Image 1 (spheres, rainbow, N blue to C red):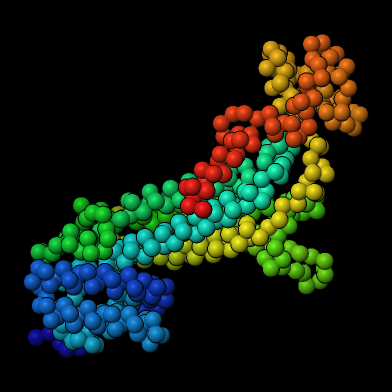
Image 2: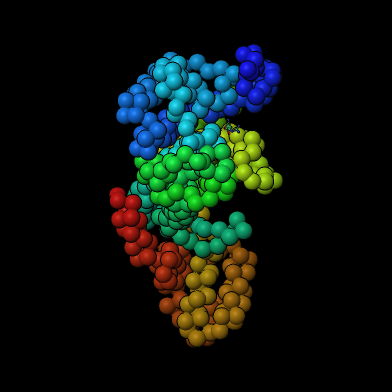
Amino acid sequence: MASPSRSGVFAKETDSRVELFTESISFDARLYAHDIRGSIAHAQMLEKIGILTDNEREAIEGALLDIKADIEAGNFTTSISLEDIHMHIEKMLIDKLGDVGRKLHTGRSRNDQVSTDFRLWVRDALDRVDELLLQLQRAFVGRCDQDADTIIPAYTHMQRAQPVLAPHYWLAYCEKLQRDRERIADCRKRLNESSLGVAALAGTSIPIDRQDTAERLGFDRVAANSLDVSSDRDFVLESAFALSMVATHLSSWAEEWILWKTIEFDFIDLPHEFCTGSSIMPQKINPDILELIRGKTGRVIGSLQTLLILIKGLPLAYNRDLQEDKPALFDAFDTVEACLDIAAPLVEGATIKADSINQRLEQGFLDATTMMEYLILQGIPQRTAHHMIGCLVALATEHNTSLAKLPLEEFQKLSPDLDEKIYGVLGVKNAIAAFKSYGSTAPEQVKAQISAWKTRLEM
Ligand code: ARG
């Protein structure tokens, strides 16, 4: 007979330092609802294949729902002697039901349980992020009518380049956010297969019905190879990458608006309830939210790095290293959700400072390229036209004026055929009106894009 002082195969109790070092309950407790959902599906399947009676399944299901309610009511204390949320819930179940509770873990292991719970959690989290991205897109599109006639200088190399309509700018962000949403949808598709029932790594000799649990949990299909899926964290890496892209997009937007909020640019005012002051300088209205959105990007990209490095050296199949995937991905989701949540009202509440922008709009020769294109359309080769306008810009700079204010003789010195019509493309307003190509800042193009976005986002 085995000695009753033994704990199964273990001759000694676990050292308390090991418990403290290996626990995950401190960060995986947030999987409780998904764990319970997975266990209910598993119990229903066990009934279907005759492992549980109808009464046993009902008792398990009822007890699991009570446990869920208890956790949500705060009647839940954790202990590191029960490693993770999965063991906590199972212990509570056994405390309630005795031997019936001891049957639940039939035909599964914590390895597939963790993977299933995490997939379910990440799937919900991706859906939340998608909704937040949609809200931010709507915030940008929602500005388009009020800013319809505002022209902004656009930059390359942070040097004034060509004029664009403000809505063209807002829709540029919508496109980026749309790609983020597509990445999330794509990641969700690949994630959405069931790992439940691969058990520890090789499957099980219990005649479980994996298709049944997959359907109950809303998975599109059953993962085909138990070894693969018990080690698979592609969905974790892919979502961390998708989140890193979102954070990167938010970061460049934030950087831009931080610049726009300076007196040097003076393009934008941020709602005061979304700014902060200084403890010493009474005049300060600082864009801290934007700075933190930019700053927090580091955490998200850091999580992606953590996860890639975590996974890259792991042989098949389950390794305990995998427990470390949760803090990193939870933090990435929390950070991106918080950033998106605060970005939308900031976008809605900002005011574009058209007067201040207009005061300096004719600086920087934003119309030079359109003028060059006008010459090209008159039959002058592009390289020649480029050189001619370069000379005119130098002349105008020397006289501290703009192209539109140069006398016609100056244009005719370069090309005698030029007449008064040249002034029709000069000046920023005329330059904007001259645009034609698909996807450009041409007013007609922008108008069509605004209405396409409104339809797409059901606004
Ligand atoms: N707490 C662990 C995790 O979150 C579960 C470990 C299950 N498997 C094992 N063989 N220890 O990943």
